[in-house]
Image (spheres, rainbow, N blue to C red):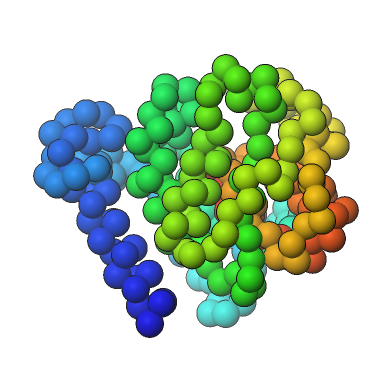
Length: 243
């Protein structure tokens, strides 16, 4: 019954997101409450079809039912977490909405975007808790909110899973790493996140974007050190390689 209810809520949210009074991305008038116009929805690049079960990288071909497939990168260097999900690719409309949520005080976007993430979340172990990736206090002071925390609250409300906002803590304020290589990002993020207490057995780490997985690696490593046995990564968007 709960699964059926979540499906109903997901379908309704998809309709609400698509038909709204004003498009979240471009501001054009549309029908309903809180969605996207047709042109912006077409540029949302939702992740469908085959994708890596660890990092959510889109893959060519079909995904075998019930099987986790891995991309070449994850086969060569498996990440420390157990599974990964993402709702869309980090480009087009999704990129614009994420930047607005993070840097333009568009906290109203957390609800529809968090609903997308809740729908993208696949099977996770029973009893899992949600932990948003933390901001360093200096960055939180200037931004005034943690977008990952806002998204985590929406996901928790939709799934019924508890959220622990203070389970992870950012120890240092890392600089912007837009042009860093994967190795440089991992080195910069190493030891930057701390688990503040004994970790639950199953944790879902929530963040807005996965690029190289450096932040998720730091968060997972911290959780493992404090006893987490199973870690799921859930991001809104994935920076995807061309197929």
